Structure formats: C-alpha cells, structure tokens
Length: 488
Image (cartoon, rainbow, N blue to C red; front, side, top):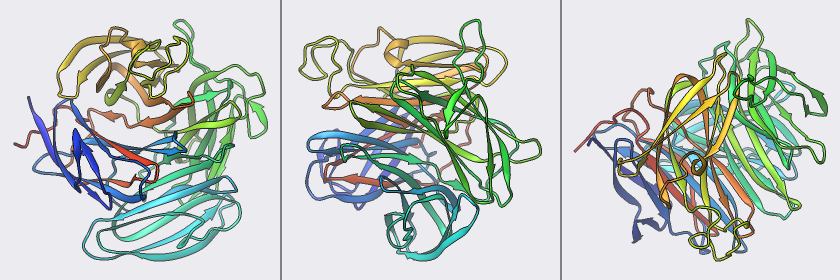
C-alpha cells in the first residue's frame, strides 16, 4: 500500500504528545493512502505557549491537515476551532470586525531565515480606506494579534476588511472571536483570500446554515476586487425525496424576505445576519450567492452559532466548498449515545455524555437533478472497514447526517477517513461536534478535500497553535487526494 511520509515541525510549542508522552519540537509521521494520523499536545494549565506548525514533505506530496485547538476555562471546555493546513501567499484580504464582544485576530508566519516587511490597510463597509501601516516579521517567526492591538490599532466599533501585502510569502489565518454571556472566549477560523483572486461570475453555495431553535447564521461577503460587486443571497430549504430545495423567507438584518441583495464597494465587506423570532422552529439548508450578470463573485463564508441556556455556546465557520464528485475528510465518533461507559459517568440514556465527539456531514446539491452520494470508511492505517452508505440529495437541496446515523453498525470508538463520491456535483461541510462538561454542544468545521485536487510538495502551515494556559491542540493529517505518492 502506498504511503506518504512527512516531517511535522512545531515552533514555539512545548510538549507534543504523539501516541506516548514525549517532549519534542518535531515528529516524523507516515500516512497511508486513504489513511491519516492524529497527534496531540499535552495541554494543561501551565504557562501558555503560542507558535505555529509546519509540515515538511520529504520526497512526497503534502497531506491534507487541520489543527484543532481547544480552550478550557475553569475546568470546562468552552471552545474548539479547526485551523486548516495552509500554503503561503504574498497578498491577501479577510473580513475584519471589532466591537465590545467581537474581535478579529490574525496570525502571520515567516518561515524564511530573513525578515519580511508587511504592509496593511483597513477598508470599512462604505469603501473608505483607513488605518494603513506596516511592520516587520522577524526571520522564522510568528505573530498573532487582534486588530485592536499593535501594529493594527483599530479603535471603536469596526466592520470591513483587512488587506495586506508582504515582501516575501507568508502563511496567514484569521480568527473570529466572541465573548459570550458567561464571559467565555469562543473562537472560529475564517478564510483569508489570496490576492489577486481568480474571480469568476458564477454563483456559489455555502453548504450549511441553521436558523431558529436557538441557532442563527451570518453570511459574510468580501470584495476581493477593486470594482463594485452586486448580486443576491438566498437561503434554500432542504427539499425532500420528491420536492426540490427552494428559497425560504428568513429575517435578515431586520427584514423578512426570500432574497437579499448585496452591494459591495471596492475592497469592502457586508454581513447578512439572521435573527429568528422567539420560538421559531429549527430550519437548516444551504446558502446560494448569485452575482449580478456581468459582475464577478465575491469571496465569502458563513458563521452559524447556537444560543442555549442563556448563553452563546458555539460558533463555527462554513467556508465555500467548490462542487465536485469525490471528496475525503477525517471523521471521528467517540461513543454511541445512549451509552453508559466511555463518554462520562452519567448512566442516563437521555443525557449527552461529556467528551462525546461525533462528526456530521452537511451536503448541498446545487444542480437541477437529485444526486446520489456513496460513502465509504477507512481506518487511519488505510484499511477499509467494509462499511458503505448512500444518501440522496434533492435538486437544489441539502442533507445533514451524523456519521453514526450513516453507519449504525460502526465499531466505536472510531477515527478514520470518509470518502464520498457521486455522479453529480455537490458541496460538503464536515462538522465536528463535541459535548463539554456542561453538556453544551460545541461545533467546529473540518476541511473537506477534493480527490481531484492537484498535488503539491511544498510545505504546509498551521499559522497558530497553542498549548498550556487551558489550551491544547490536536493535529490531524490525512491523505486528501487519490493515491498520494509513496516516498520510502
């Protein structure tokens, strides 16, 4: 069986746990085709150390990966955020927001042995440029700062974009943070668009939204061009076996409608925030963004959050997944519910068990015909489980399922890779759900890779990882494309 071997380097991080308790700054791994590997830092309440991860292939192609870092406050896991493995860029743009409760953090990595100069500026939602500045990022170093901190120094309430240009390639990720009603620190990652963007005028889909029942979704669009962009946003229903998905009326930015127009000034952004009335039933589906004919598409993402027992308990980002016909992603199921062992000590069959992890898949079909999706599971060593499943997604529709629902006879606990294939074109979101010690449902999204993506052998980065001070980080690396090359 073919293998991919790579070298994983942690800079600025203390203890790394790889199958046994060890203290190191680097770990060598091997992943098999359709397999993966999981490595975790020790965590704990000691001094906080922040750094970055670097995956250095050795005569092999670069695997897919994600770093999931979690934060515990007062002994309770309050947030998890998945930082996808990224490649470097020279210039980029991301959504930026700062208020009393919300902030945007940005992490930059310089992986070369000489300093890099970074020039930046902000653009508000009216298209006005402000806050231009620059800073030097030292050789082989990382910086993580909020936009309200030096060197950015945004003051007061702000919503718009942050644009940067570097003198040499850097790895960059943005973090959206929120202080909830319990004064807990929630985090989710958001994409940074590389400039110049390969713009198109095609509609695109965000494969999941949630509205009502304590859930709300914000759709955020970013203009990655220097021209005005216009178009519309629609929230589409799931559909049924006999009925296609269709636009539904939701309350967005104070207005109730089935379609919402956007007008994006050059380099600016817009946020469309849903607000369900009290008692509204939960609705889920997909989001369709359609540019006006003759104009380019914006960049975009969605953030969905849950309010439960008097507090916002979770936020997660849905990035745009280009439609395709074959995908892979890492999935995990820690135990079956109801359960009496393995997920906490509460024997009640109706109470969620602290520590329970389960992956879920949200699938959208933007075509005019139904799509049948076939699913297979392999273990981390690439061995097939022999389990298969299929799901039919209605035209313009949406389906969401837990892995346990799709594979009810799966032996647990399970960590492995799911492969999804279809004769049509679909988009997929992988949602990692986890119950904390209060039985709050935490969610973060995980990368989904297209099997037909081009391979590369360049270094991959996790621009921010954290250990200690209540933080811990789990690194997941897997074979993301068809038959990744062997090296040794």
